[in-house]
Length: 78
Image (cartoon, rainbow, N blue to C red; front, side, top):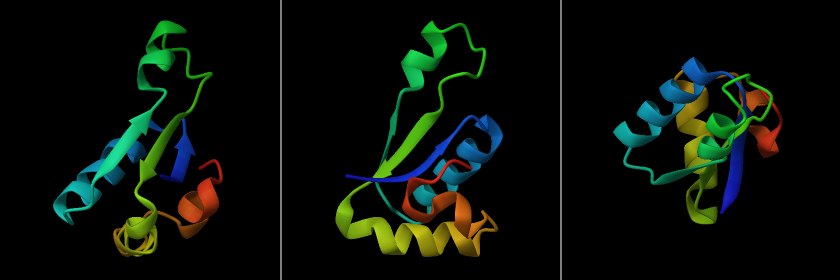
């Protein structure tokens, strides 16, 4: 699995998930429940993961959808 995006931006993350789902790219969200346990303070970022084989396509699809490339490049925080 490749980390596409690590973020506290719940709206952007929701949009990214919808874009990936529409493109038929399977994804997995890590740290979702940990973030809830910490009290929804936004301290712990969530990580959007995709299969290694889908990483290039997923980055392209997200970039085409208007999500800044820097946000999804090599899992940099966005």
